[in-house]
Amino acid sequence: MPAGFNFIFNDYGAPTHRISSIMATNSEAFTDGEAVKLASGRWTKATNGANVAGFANQTLAAGTNQYLDVVIAREGDWFEAPYTGTPDAAFVPGCEVADVSTDGLSVLASDVTGGPFSVLEVNTVKATCKIKVKKRVFS
Image (cartoon, rainbow, N blue to C red):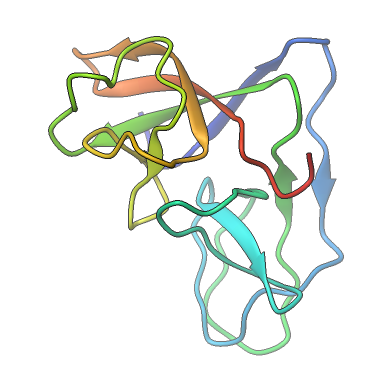
């Protein structure tokens, strides 16, 4: 599985919703599928414990005053992502506070305190999980 968060489905059958009218933080590069948040009115990489706004829908080289296309994390959206770190004993289906990794491209399975993700499924063979974004910017 490629790195990053991938939209799987929406509980209500809704297609993805994208925002492309907000600029990326200057001098910051983004990777397709990377978790993002808003800071000072611009997209930036999501950090541990942050509310996630969505996921980059393109790869964007660092630059100045560039627009970034983002798939918004909404109620009912499910995503699949790789997980990194040695899984905490509580990193199982039903975990409600898994966190984003420092690379923004995976779930940090060793950190299950204060994160934005609830876990539906963990695939230990592929080191992937299915998650829902509970702590969202646009909730």
